[in-house]
Length: 65
Length: 517
Ligand SMILES: Cc1cc2nc3c(=O)[nH]c(=O)nc-3n(C[C@H](O)[C@H](O)[C@H](O)COP(=O)(O)OP(=O)(O)OC[C@H]3O[C@@H](n4cnc5c(N)ncnc54)[C@H](O)[C@@H]3O)c2cc1C
Image (cartoon, rainbow over all chains, first blue to last red):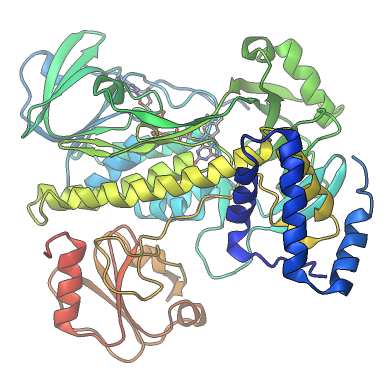
């Protein structure tokens, strides 16, 4: 799993593009977009071990604030 | 101790009794940008009249963060050392989510620069030092307080200006009229110029308090930023130190607050106590703001030129307002001087528009992104924002996505009309390094300079100041390697050569002055 920054100077641009993709959508539409996006990114990563590790990490509850 | 707002003297202007000869430049507004503009022009030998409707420095501190590039420009204007000596140099920034520290960062990664990445200094000090510097140049700068501009007409070859004073009205003529009147720019409104952009719905409470005891754990001044602070539910907060034991506190209040009700002692004092606890403090200044990002389409309208907030406004996250405006003055000063002396065609001013419009668009992009991150517009934006903050504790990549303001950096002018060649350093503002007992920023700004590093000296070219350094310091070598760098008066590199050929250098100089076609 890549913990360190892998986006370099493009982080803000990419984050902004993600927010932009959601603009004007209802919450249900946003969920659907996210689901499609996750599946597509999974296909980009492809490696089942890496995906399993990512899924496990993402499932860890955030320390609540 | 509270700042002493001593009024500047008003003197009845000569124009009240008899017509004044046409002035080369009239600057409207004695804020930081108008003042920097006048000093810059004066250092290029150009006289100006500066008109301001007020007679004190900025009341309340407003801008506090001044970036390295601004300090380097202030160095050239003769006030850098003074700003640095008075300012608070901060190094460590800490970011909290709730009461948990997420990460901290060091702002000063590198030695070998005269100026630090940032200082904090109240805008009233910056303006005071600029006024005092302008007063050292009385033959060149005519500062007129309580002179309000109420109208102007572009006559094609000059501008006619209506001015109101406590003793009545008068008119002035100027070859060039510089609008430096701030965000509300009456000139912009008179000319009906669209000023478009994004307004943010959130209100922010901005407070300065004086405290003798530091709220930080160590003695050194820091910048603390909270998302969802424990003392201020659901919003963000910022705390940092200014000179005179004054601390700036920014609190995000949300869109549905009543600004008048919030900016009262009854409301503010409990909020401050929630942050600083029992530490005694004095309330110095407070204000509630809504921010917007907007710019003019063009900064140059024949003989009317816009600089600073009258040309562009940004939200303060990233401190790009004042810092961006100082770069306007830096960019315009030498160009206007060259046009007025006949050394360059009037079309050189189009490059001011091209370069600074680009710079301000970059500032707006960065400030808007930070504001958007801090004020999620929809539940889904909030969801992602919180996911980034959650991940940041254990996944360093997510820290880089947290955006509480990307601190002001000078833009690159690479690829713009005045620059020659594709070398990656071309267009950048110069990177400082030690030179002899001093610094590159002290020696390579203010005039076209050819920095030659290594054995070969450059041939003499008229209009270029040679700076040959046969034995560069290690930092200078690391940052520039060898070769010849043509540096504009505003410190931007406009050409670089492996070998110094007179013809190529002359051509690059002509291009940088807008003479080449
Ligand atoms: C809360 C806050 C925090 C900020 N923090 C930062 C920061 O940390 N760093 C940063 O770089 N920037 C910051 N800024 C932005 C910064 O304050 C502005 O960008 C800066 O003041 C712009 O300078 P200016 O000279 O263009 O305009 P102003 O400072 O607004 O000056 C304009 C001058 O023109 C005069 N004037 C207006 N109309 C007339 C007229 N008709 N005739 C004559 N004179 C007139 C006014 O009296 C005034 O003196 C902040 C702003 C705010 C509000």
